[in-house]
Length: 356
Ligand code: NAD
Ligand code: LMR
Image (cartoon, rainbow, N blue to C red):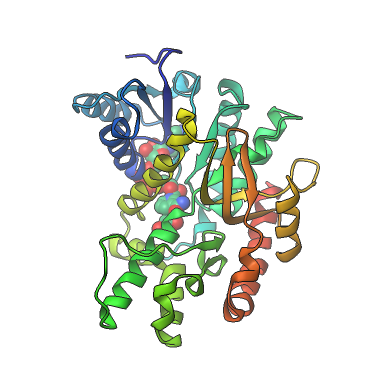
């Protein structure tokens, strides 16, 4: 069923027939309706270059008994998937195999993301849409996508509408911390796992988990905390190794991306003026100016890096205030041993992305 302009909320998944795309679309089809007030309606638009696969996924999902409507698009039909979208989720591109780094995916995935950026600029309302990028390497591809959108929409603050999804790192940090505290003998007081802020980027040393800001983590030994940091930084490798050539994390990533969409829903329905979350975003506009005073403050702590994952507020205009104070709240160990190497690596990843 084609999407009509009157439908309330439209979420588009680009790369919907892939490992992440299918699982994420399933979560959205089954859960989105329960997040909306009864008089609001959600539509799920699925696009993939793999025509047979996206047709199959669309038909399959459309039989699920929820109020979320579904439509599928392939090949040249991307315009139908993107027009009127409130949120565009992009898990399109190639995943890693054992022995590869995320950076090894850059050449092929940058081509895909540039072409998708041109389509988003053509078909989406750039004063309304939120673009959530999942494809790797996030550290370089967010700059690629922002640059592409800026080229097609000069003068519009498009950099505030692009969000690199690093939530999987926080999901892992939370899970691994929970396991470590249980191993250390503590009994969990609730089924809700502790939330661990993770800042920086999404690859190896650029991933900076801030266990010092989590009350439950202070009882763990320094060695245990160092092991946890390492496991969060290289958690993706565990899955790539276990899948042994069949790709990288899909199910945990779909969960992480679903949690992000869930967090955007109150903003999309207008029931709140802003939401909060941690995303890898642009801190400067196309002229190289800080996007606001909070970004300017953060830039002064991170060697002026124009992209960084940080807790921030999102309004209907996109990225709003960023939590620059988090750099002052982190421990000395985190600042000297984790943030410093992160900044060096991230600088290289951003420059590579901007040079493409
Ligand atoms: P996959 O190969 O299973 O799926 C990718 C899908 O993208 C395929 O269906 C393919 O046909 C489609 N595709 C390719 N080019 C396209 C285009 N131009 N337009 C639309 N669709 C296109 O891969 P996956 O396991 O789903 O992973 C997808 C990406 O997500 C990879 O780059 C992976 O590294 C990344 N990833 C990121 C995170 C994160 O934390 N941000 C986590 C896991 C994976
Ligand atoms: C992850 O962290 O699992 C993803 O970035 C996929 C990967 O290549 O590791």
